[in-house]
Length: 276
Image (cartoon, rainbow, N blue to C red; front, side, top):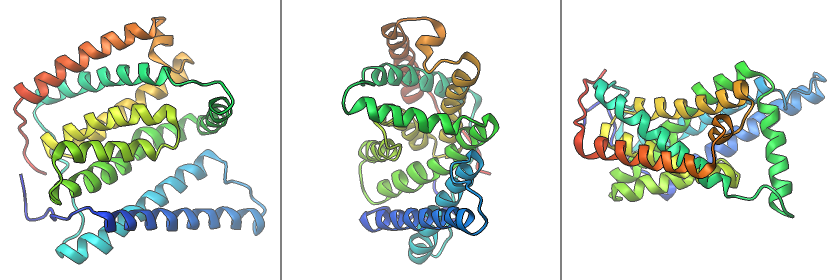
């Protein structure tokens, strides 16, 4: 469903360069702010959770701003705008179990990636230390992972990249897959890479069918909220550990959940919504 208030922009290699330039500029700006605090004000807050939350927000905003002002407004004469319409209740009853099923499948695949050895061991230790720093403040982590990340990342990977590629003539399944791979790469580690690709395909499918960015944002937040609950309340890092089940059982449940609700959502459900 197209509306004149939604610009029909495209995403190509130049758009990718603009996003990358926005990311570099934002990262340099945040780094400069951190160094200024350390050497001018004698405050070392670069590793503080609240500063990392602020830094992520600044970088993401500059990335989106760069694409909006240098691509969308220049080529369409309109500002970057997305459909955030809610949909019929039956759609929500299908997409959340489908997402949960893919989360289970993704967990199984992630569990097969080594965490020890000459390369993976050191990398995993660094990754664990980094995540430990992010979980020092539960409030900051929830705001960052459950609210900010779903909003910013879905705007960039589904709203800008996926939609822009489809507008540029790329087949929808290819655009969904490519955006999901980029979504996996941005996480910067093999354990989140595989799961992010799988979850990204679900997010991309939901966005493509509903045309509303609200739904993938909610699903993304749901995934991150489940991870936060596992970490803070069960003190476990996986559903298998929390439920005291074998990973293959989690995989089996995930395949059944995903397959059933994927079929119902894709082939049986009719999406209905009114734009807001």
